Image (cartoon, rainbow, N blue to C red):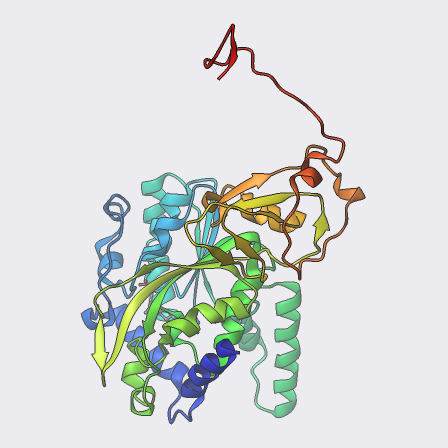
Length: 404
Ligand SMILES: C[S@@+](CC[C@H](N)C(=O)[O-])C[C@H]1O[C@@H](n2cnc3c(N)ncnc32)[C@H](O)[C@@H]1O
């Protein structure tokens, strides 16, 4: 209940009538930022210096990020960078994922795309492989390839509402037949200081798009600007503050809730800048990096698995509503067991997995009611007929007189 109310407050603050075209303000600001570096647009952040050495100075200088999502990406992964700007994050990622990985930067700004693409060949030569592409699209609509739309428009200029309907049909076809980023195709979605820039009415769709393109088990790692209170109407109605990554900032609690509402689990704050970046009308704005996972959707099967939560909290609850009590042997379905125990899961270090003595093959498993929280008796794990007695003959505390 409180979740809904707090989000409503935040959404209401962002849906107040805005007296200017948000996208136009953002586009113009970053067109200029691609031509001339603007220091105040950047909230200083530390990147791993090894990866900066190979980057052209212009790319390093035209950095408008606020965090470093790149440090949470591994070799071989396919990564999409939302709002890739000059390409700094993408060219760092190119080195992180290596020749076996892939990096796709998405931006809607021609000047930024031209700047990032300018260094593609130089970087490929330096790295000895080519694994980066920059594509044109809106990050809240990752199906639509805007360069393909532009090509079509050049060949079919429109001037009537009937033409407009034909264009809409073509856009629908492009989204279905040639999506810019396909469903379930990406290991990691990163973004650095961009989500706040998206129009309030498109923000929910933006999170749905991040979820759509990720593979099951994939993750979003997003650095963005958050605020501790809702921005005032005066702040929101200032186009300079919007394009400067202030007015569209997420209230920090709603930022996490946006991931939850889109279906993510394991949502976690990785970094929250201690010092605020800016304070306006008493509202603090700072950078935060959040990680969230895709993969909790799907059927629940009973395979007699259990987990023990190690602590230190007395109890914890996951995004499916399961409560785990410290030290207790909790019954979980096969899906939850796999989510908790996957080596890359955010939960694995807190969990002790307990497999049944006799494995139940998935094809023979019965449905598991995940809406209840239950403990599992050890006999259920071991089997009712479990009667083994083990005497350890080599035990150091035993002697000829018997065990101590
Ligand atoms: C603050 S800059 C960040 C650039 C880059 N991530 C970095 O760390 O330097 C924002 C970038 O996102 C792009 N952008 C803003 N809104 C966008 C949208 N809705 N769709 C695609 N790109 C967008 C801008 O053109 C700009 O290049």
